[in-house]
Image (cartoon, rainbow, N blue to C red; front, top):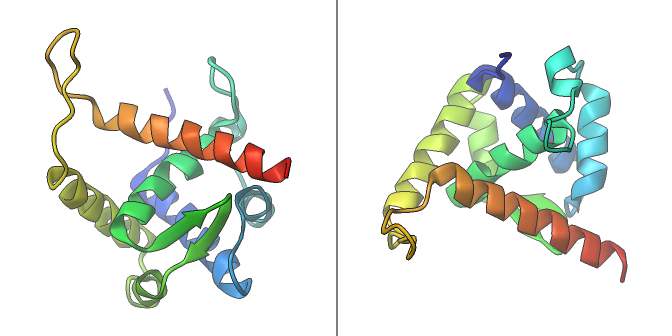
Length: 150
């Protein structure tokens, strides 16, 4: 099965930051994703669909932005994405895409470790990291749709 490397994810995220930084006040997520797609050449895998539905490209980017938010580099509110001052500084200093994304992932794990562990009441186990990120992405998409309809 094809995978998207951390380097490739970092390339996507750094390009996303370029787009957001060039737009005063950030952008609506859907517009940022559309602009990002125009700037990238997607692989066949990235351009494909998940069996459960949804384009891989959009899910890959949305999933990875959870790390950026928890690192304090990206702010999301009412469907609008904005690079924070810390994010702008990191963008300028960590120019290697892989290093950029690895640092966001490291900070996400640091944040995650500081959170109280959620226990599944049915089987007494802790929640999975990817489940939490997936729920965050799903909630984000629902919020964006609600704001679009206002």
